[in-house]
Structure formats: C-alpha cells, structure tokens
Image 1 (tube, rainbow, N blue to C red):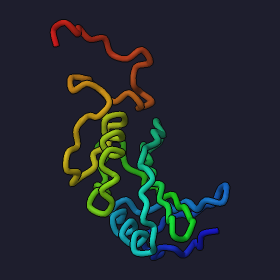
Image 2 (tube, rainbow, N blue to C red):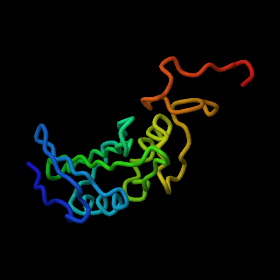
Image 3 (cartoon, rainbow, N blue to C red):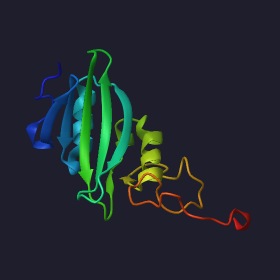
Image 4 (tube, helix red, strand yellow):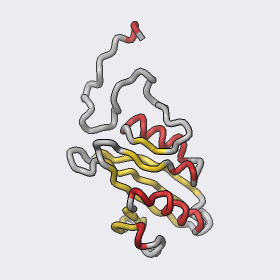
Length: 150
C-alpha cells in the first residue's frame, strides 16, 4: 500500500484509495511539481494520461494520470480538475516524454489544451474534424461532412 503522504500536502486537494491504488487530487497549477516529485521517488513509468468529462458539472473535466514505480512495485493515480470553458493544463512532456501521445489523444477527443506540448495536433480524428467526440455534449451521431469537398 502506498503512503498517503507521498507528496507535499500543499499539492494535494484530496486523497482516496480504491482497489489498493491511491488517488491524489492535485492542484492543477502544480501538476508538474507533483510529477517531478513522483519521478524523484522512483515513479519512473508514466503509464497514461486521459480525461473524464463530468458535464454538466463544473469544473467539467478531470485529467487523470497513472504512474508506476517498477522499482518499488507501486502505482498511483493523479487527478486534476479543469474548467469546461477553456480546459488547459501544463504538459507533462517536460517531465515524462511518454506523455506525448496520450496528451495528443486527450486533446483530440476531449479538447483539453496541454500547454507547452511540443506537437499538440490531432492524432485520431482527421485534421478537418470539428469538435471532440468524447465530450458528453457531442452529437450522438456525429457531424455530417461532405467528404468529397475535403
């Protein structure tokens, strides 16, 4: 089991444990500081980053990071809540290069801006696609396009 005092308390808003995995809700403006602290504690593996759309709640999005310490055989989940109006958070790529494609996927499907990302472009949807298909307010049948004119 992971100690709940893994990070400086000024970084953490809330903690919970489920299925023997610790979840820490992090102050969004301090996500890079939290990631650097975990890396210094041998959380060498950046497993993934994704998002959850909590529409119509505000803050609308949760950005969820999964980290692993192979050396210590431990896992931890970090969550940051970001607003729906202009969803943005610092890019984890400056700490973990492995965040690159995961952040592009979250950008493409949820519309979250990862500030400082080296190439924040669509990765799954075509460049001409409008909207972000994993948002809860996205049309169920998608948008209609005239593909011949593209």
